[in-house]
Length: 333
Ligand code: NAD
Ligand code: DAU
Image (cartoon, rainbow, N blue to C red; front, side):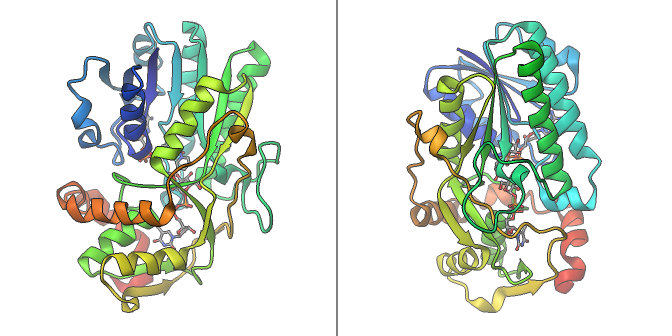
């Protein structure tokens, strides 16, 4: 099957490229190469016969139409993805996550692709104090990021109702693993700990996220693409609910640092307290997450320890400007 994957130079996208190629699919990776897109993430597959890279924006209808030649399945992972950036400067988020999605969807429909998979997030449901979100729960996003992702989901689901287009939406939980841009909790705290820098814990650090390994997330997306029912939504969660402070202490232990690096800083505005997903629907189709969190976190820390050449250049230039704006007043850095 020829797959058009968007955002394949990012964290989850690059893992999906490796998975899809290993299963014998052809992959056309269309990526705009924003600050989060890194060609090094796909360097090992660049010469693969079944792989092609297209440097383009999902909102560029002409380039998207060219890239869709011979494509059976579209997997849309391209997005602006960081909640904190969306709070500082929301403008780019609806441009890619809503408008870009709508353009890609429209071109996919015109090209007659067999199926369109929208890779979304558990954040569209908002915060859940007890229990776990099911796919039928209402959308209640808290941040400009999650509101934009919710807008993308609705564009995709509306295309199914209006045109009968074959679409599937996946909603993944907090994902961790190698090659995650060091603005998100785990790679930020691991790389800061390796450098002996403060770990800025928002508020009391007792917010809960449900963590899934990037390989389990990608398997879930591919499984939903291959076995999901048209017009349906599938939650993809790891079942590893942990408060941020527990993760922080685990990272300190794995990097040989102590709690003196922890700084409790001003909380994120609109911060969702807890995420949890009911994944019975995708499990009923035969998928399940396989990676143990303790082991996966240890391997992730080992990867960042062994791959300083990947993240040290990132933590300069644009990154430092963002870091100062986001954390300067909070940690006095
Ligand atoms: P990422 O930020 O690491 O990568 C995003 C990629 O999209 C980058 O390569 C970037 O260059 C590309 N991109 C951005 N705007 C684009 C545009 N207009 N046109 C083409 N390419 C563009 O993201 P990620 O963490 O790998 O997330 C991938 C997808 O999974 C996103 O849709 C995100 O909402 C979703 N998701 C992420 C998580 C998580 O914890 N990281 C969890 C659930 C869902
Ligand atoms: O739930 C899925 C979502 O997970 C994805 O859709 C998003 O793309 C992804 O960024 C992620 O969103 P979060 O906001 O949950 O992830 P982040 O890594 O930014 O934060 C995780 C938790 O850690 C959250 O409660 C905020 C907290 N945090 C984060 C940072 C960056 C801190 O306490 N300090 C920090 O410096």
